[in-house]
Image (cartoon, rainbow, N blue to C red; front, side, top):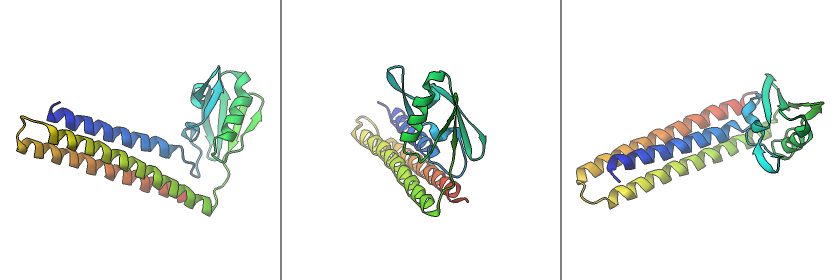
Length: 183
């Protein structure tokens, strides 16, 4: 493996960690209804467990309401139960083949809990970024037939990507905290 491949691999790992954290944060409920809120809901359908967005269309016609329209009308009750059991604190209401999911107002206490959860998710992202950095640094040190200057230059590059990734995660956290605490 060459130095540029090691740096590229580390950058990919850091980018994946950021994207994963961004996806996890999008699943945390703030005051606004977004279809991504239900991305983590899994539904038992057709003999396997699948993400909700593969068996239904989720839309947000109002700021405090989600509407779930199953592609297969027979799955409406299963989807309703999956949303209730997802641990999101949501209470869906079935209306024939359409499921309406009103978002209740968040209490101040619940908002603070959500901020703590966001902090934990971002910390997990930081750990993943640091792990990618550690892996790259170890591989760089083990390389033979490479000058020390090139190794040092690549280590600086990997460290720069690490710093950028951590800064991006911090920005994601600040934005999500502001969104959750907004009344």
